[in-house]
Length: 82
Image (cartoon, rainbow, N blue to C red; front, top):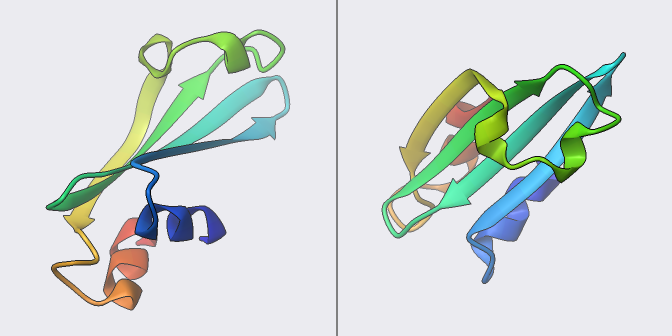
């Protein structure tokens, strides 16, 4: 959730990945004035996928919540993780 904290500043998109034994699981957090969107992409080969765009992966999970300007910070974190 530390990465989500970056969305409270000037950044509008944050990416981080997990090496899942040959696969990559890439989390992409995007903020707009209204929503925070969390999308998890799956890639088959972590040795090449870090250089690929998000669109080259398969969407595994996606959720959106009102931005921190619209709701308390703890609710945004809760909705992004449940």
